[in-house]
Image 1 (cartoon, one colour):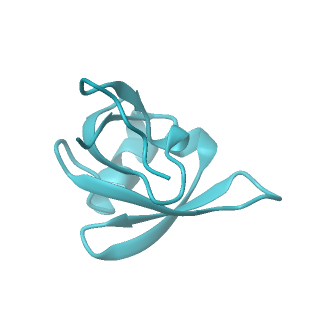
Image 2 (tube, rainbow, N blue to C red):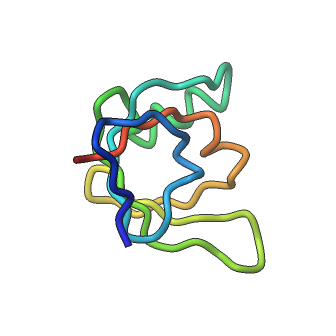
Length: 85
């Protein structure tokens, strides 16, 4: 089920549910975590899609630039997103 809103709303990557699409608004991460996110292709205005959320851990799978990556909620919580309309 996709998030619906009458206007673009800002949220965190960790809040996406499977099937939701968004665009990266900004990164709140610093240091090595920021570098890792940038190396994975997570940059401003980059489209992302949540593919899977683990029921038994804090991991989620996201499609970013055609690749599937897994991030812990703690790391994904440092990525601000804008839900796609």
